[in-house]
Image 1 (cartoon, one colour):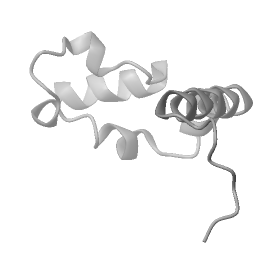
Image 2: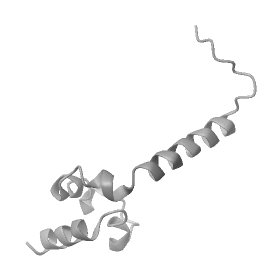
Image 3: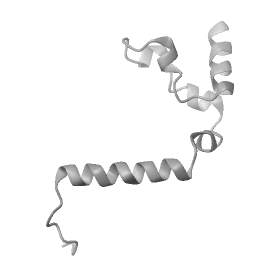
Image 4: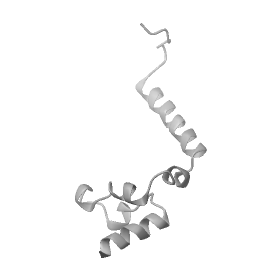
Length: 79
């Protein structure tokens, strides 16, 4: 059995704390730094148009990628 007190913990409170944690993590590790640990091909393999919901516009599919990764994606589309 756990020993953490559960009084006052609501789903909203848990979501709020989760958001605060996520915000703190994102601030401590910028997206560019996180993405630098992965090759563009590795990241782009998860961004195949066939796997993305059809209501996304092409520019929305590239959200979060660096300029280098977007260039690599565009080059891949040309070939």
